[in-house]
Image 1 (cartoon, rainbow over the protein chains, first blue to last red):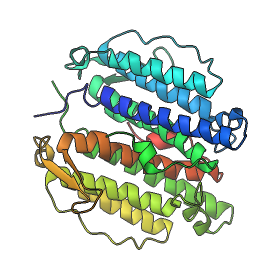
Image 2: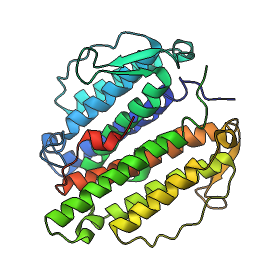
Image 3: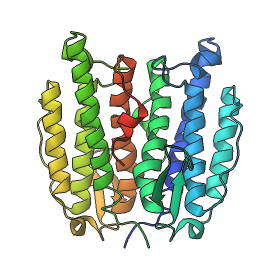
Image 4: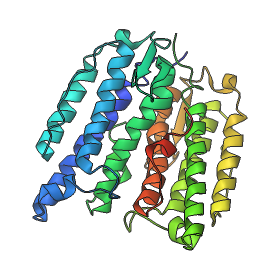
Length: 169
Length: 169
């Protein structure tokens, strides 16, 4: 018995995108209740040279779509980073969930040795096989942005706990 | 071709514990350079009801040891949470790396269906098979604490970048 490449990717991303969605709903409700402009949260950051919440959400969703698509050998869907509101973030997450959940396990499984090239043609070009791409690159990157989104909201007083981060598991 | 349970656990934890160690070395050097008490960083938190850096490091290392041990069916090593300094944190990470890297792949592989019970006998008791325990619980928990440690240091002005978080991959 071993783990399938699909089991280690799409369901993991789905669990955390769903929890991110729920976290953002709580943040939006908190902003409304306290009569705080949603932008205060969406543009909040932990350090002047770190990305704000909105961008953390965009990047987390981007990694979920991009990693899943590359593992399946599909074209990475082009998405404009035009989100400005909590509703836009929810729509982006919903689109990303629909995209990755439409990938059948058979499209990903067996692709552990598929060569994946990131940032091709740039000085940062890296070549991975599918397994290394997911485990050493995609998963750490994805969790970074989901956790940072949570951390920004906690730092700004939204009442969240580890249970919200973990989602349904 | 599929992923082995070992490949999805021990090397992932190792990559990130090594990066956490390097991040803490940078934080210690930063504190020394700016003549700031190390405790200022070790006790820093993003919110009054979140754990400080020191505890984030302890919990990250604890998940790496505990998840790896449970997957292998080994006793989880008892470690006192007595760390107080950057040096103590480094020793804890080194011990944790030694422990997980001493587990042979054969001790973990094939245990995808092993039943793992967390918080047994408590209202929070949960039963998982090995694969679900790793992918839906252990990995998200581990990355939460590594990323939060990084976020605390970035928030407190330590010069770190995504490269430091990703480590050697």
